[in-house]
Amino acid sequence: MLVLFETSVGYAIFKVLNEKKLQEVDSLWKEFETPEKANKIVKLKHFEKFQDTAEALAGLVFPMCEER
Image (cartoon, rainbow, N blue to C red):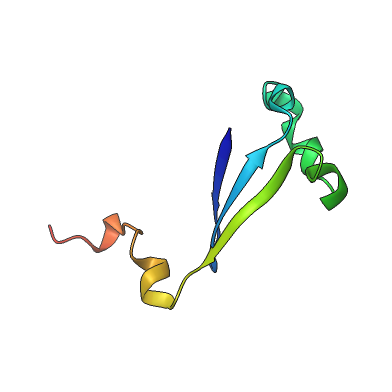
């Protein structure tokens, strides 16, 4: 399983190493408290940096700015 994670500087694709841990949703955050713990659950496969601010903002929707 792959997981997509988007940040303000780009996006990352991670491979899930332990899918059973993902089923424990109530305590999933605990598995990411430290980089060492996170490395046991996911492995970074690819990171793509946005070229500029326009690309980073291209997917955003601003409902308050829409014409009425």
